[in-house]
Image (spheres, rainbow, N blue to C red):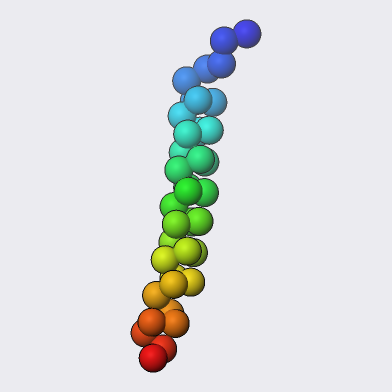
Length: 37
């Protein structure tokens, strides 16, 4: 069964959402100590 386009787009959107959250978390994790000084 070939996967439908919505499934493929949804999976890609989910992937990029998680990548964005992880990147945002890492940036925040590194920036807050710098701003705290």
